Structures are given as C-alpha cells and as structure tokens.
Length: 288
Length: 337
Image (cartoon, rainbow over all chains, first blue to last red; front, side, top):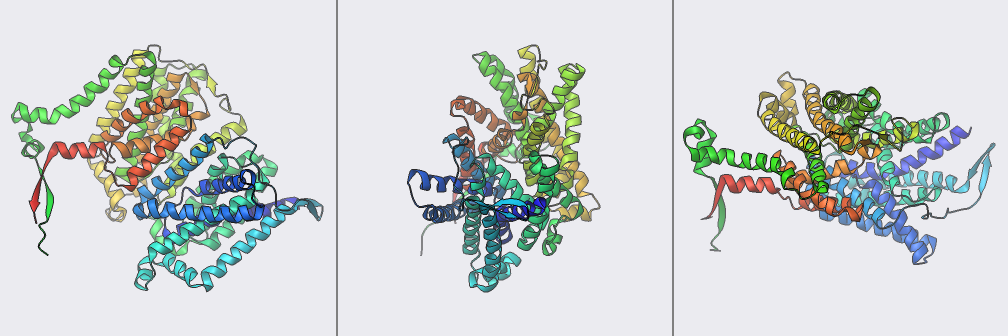
C-alpha cells in the first residue's frame, strides 16, 4: 500500500521535474542541460526573497517564478539562439551555463543543510493505514493540474498550437507565419518556469542543496528518454515507470540507487526501443 | 549607392603549396617550414620540466599532460567522429581505479598497470557506452554525463573500492623525472598518433560518420562498429591519463569521477582550437596553470571555465590554433569588390 502511494507521489514529482526539459527539447530541439541548475536556483531565489527580504511566501514564489522565466529567456536570447542547430555547441553551451550557475551557487556559500523552504501545508493524513503529509498530496495535485493545464494550453490556445506546430515541423511552421525564434524563446521561458515550479513544489520536502541540480537533470533526462525525447505524454507515462522502479529499489535496496535506476532505464530504453515509448514520429531521425 | 566595398582575400602562401607535395624535401627552407612548428612543440614540451622553478610546478606539468590527454580524446571524439563526451571523469575514473586495484591488490608495477589499465579500461568504457552508439543526437552526451555521477554514487553506496576514503598506498613512479617525461611522451605520442590516424582510411570513415552517416551505411559499413572503435581509442587516452594520475597522486578516490575532468578539457579544446588536435594540448598548457593559480577560489574556477566556454562558443571564436594556422599558411590582402 505504501509502495503504491509513495510510488504515485514520486512519479508525479518526476513528471514535474521532466516536463520543462521535455517542453524545451520538444519545441526547440535544444537539450537544456541547465535544467537542473534552473531548478535549484529557483529554490534559492525563493529562499532569499522569503528569508532575507521578508516577503510573503506566495509573493516570493510568484516573484521567483517570474525571475526564473526572465533568466531562461535571457539565456536563450543571448546564448542558445546563437548556437541553435549546432549539436555540439548546444550541448556544451547549455551544460556550461548549468555548471556555472550551480558551482557559482556553491562558491557563494549556498551549501550545507541550512537552506530549507517551509512546506505549504503542515500536517498529515492517513490514507488507509499509511501516513502521508499534506504537502505530498499537494504535490500530486499540483503535478496533475500542471499536466492538465499544459495539455489545455497546447491544444486550445494560439501560442500553444503554434508551439505544437513548431515541434512537429519547424519549416512548415515558418511558412505558416510562426516565428520560430520567438516560439523557442517562449518554450525556453516556460520550460525554465516549469523547472522552477518543480523546484518550489519539491524542494520543501528536503534541503536545498547544489547537488540536487545534477540529480534533477539526470532524472529529468531519464524520464524524457524513456518516454521518447520530445513527447510530453510519453514523459508522463515514463515518470510513472521510473517513479515506481525507484520506490521499489528504495524499499528493497536503499535510496542511493535512484540514480542507478535512472541510468539503467536510459540504457535499457536505448537498447530495446531507442525512440522511447511514444517517440514514433522521430524514430527515423534518431536511429541511424 | 556608390560606396566602395572591400573584402579580405586570403591566399595560401606559395611555400605552403610547395610543401604539400613531394617538393617539401627540395630545400632546407621548405623542410624547416614544415618541421619548425612541430619541433617547437616537441622541444618545448620536453623542455618544460627543466625550466619549471619548483617541484610544485613540475607536478603541475604532469597534471597538464593528463588534462591534455583528456582534451585530445574530447577533440577527437567531438570533431572527428561527432560524439560529444561530457564524461571525462568516466575515462579517468575507470583507468584510475583499474590501475589502483592492480597495484594495491596484485602488486603490479606502474610499468605494467598503466598499459593494462589503458587497454582494459578502454574496453570497459566502450562497453559502457555501447548502447548509445547506434543512435544519433544527444544520447551520447547524456549517457556519458551520467556514468561518472552514477558510478560515484554506487561506490559511496556500496562502500566498494575504498568508498569515500578511496584507495591509498598506491605506488608512485619512483622518480619525478620518469613521471614527467613519461606523461609528456605519452601526450606527444597520442597527439601525433591521432593526427596520423585521422588522415588514414579509418579516419576518413570517422569523419564520414560525423558528416553523413547514411552515406557510410550505404557503403556497407557498420556505423556502430566504427563509433565503437573511435570510442575505444578516445577512452584509451582518457584511461591512460587516469592510470598515470593515480600513480602521481598515489591515491584513487571518487574525485577521479568529478566534473572538473569533463569541463576543463572541453574549455581547453574550445580555446585552443577545435578540430586541430594540437589546439587542445595548447589550451591545457594555458588553462591548467591558470587553474592552479586560482586554486584558492575553489569551485569558482569551474564557473570561470564555464563562462569562458560560453563566451568562446557564443562569439564563434575559432581558437588559438586555428588562428595561428591561418596566419602561418596564408596571407591576407584587401581587394575591391
């Protein structure tokens, strides 16, 4: 029973982490290796707004999300746009930005166990006979609503439809008058905000530490590859697969193996079905 | 609109054209035009340990050479085969731990552990990376980034291979001159070996894999096989670096899997001139000593390389070596359009 409940919570958390990466990659084909860094830095921004500047929790969350959206837009506008389409440079540039942010934070003294965000709601309830704290239930609620909102956004708004059009075929989208640079900018900004949202929602469950940036990046990538790079629904499904696999290994082996689960999931996917669960349309491109 | 427009025209120097062919051996001038840059590099590298003021800086030279091996392997993989490796730590770690185990558990001499660690380690790394080789795209970068991080976790979690303390009591080279000249000679060997390799037939196939893999497949060659060979060669360089590193430090631990080993070689390659193979070595000669000077700043060094890297990539800088080669081989003049 507790495996089921915590498995669902963990899966939703993974989906939250991965959605931003999947969004950016799906639309602009830029693998955003700075994803984990954006996740962690949002936590620190919220912490500083909350603790040092003394804002209200809700206001600091909103402000932090806006800041991270602007920051990712700036990263795209000034760095990634210049290297778009050049695979080697894209990877190196985004990875270097991520490293610069994370190691800069570490150098700036943001380390140790002193940095924590408060949970949204205190207390816990029992589901069956398993105690679950309310914040984790909130994580599930937020995760599900983000997925639903994203689905509605991409199916029923002009920008969302333009984004999907670009994800399917960039040239055709250009011919229909969709400005691919602006769309990619939007995608990067919203991807950054999704990473930040995941950070704000998930970081209260533990300390904010720099190392989480690498973990989150890797788990997000694992989820995206298993689900098929660029496929959002695949990412959600893969989040459940990996989420339950991680909970099972945590229960039977120990919590250190979460990263190994992610790595094994990637390797198995690449051997068995390289395009992922839902990556049909890109299959021909990626398999040489 | 009658504005006079000019553009720069670049022409190969006559001597370059002459030395491309057999005429190179016709006169001393042509011969020296060809050999001088190479001799400057070789003699400069060989003289480095002699001109270093202190033991500390001599140690830095050895570290430079290890990073140079890694940067060479990065440049080879990225610009001749089209695989971006973010996992320098994997190569260093596998080579280093292998050498450490062979030395402490089986009592082998460094003379024996380094070659074995190079070959076996390269085999292990190739096996590790094999699943992502048939694929195009970002998979190789992702998987090679994950391995060092995951391996470090496994070592800490299972407390194998010395756990967080690492393996201590590894035999050193014995003599610091032997140590330095060994790594310097290895760098030169791999450098000129790689330069020769990329111009052989197999090098042509490697470049074809990078530029047009469908054409390679249409010619009846297995892309996976050639990529595996390339990864084997590149990881051999990295593993040799790792094996030398543990014998230099006489210690092997999870810091062998650290991110320094993936970011610094990339930065060195980009600064030195990507795709030249000599560039990465020069880049390491510049970056590693700077990084030693900045040791007091801790992780700020990584920030520093990352920002340099981003700046170089964004502004499409060509790197020192490409610039130098252009100036050496060509002259420029303004022409009217």
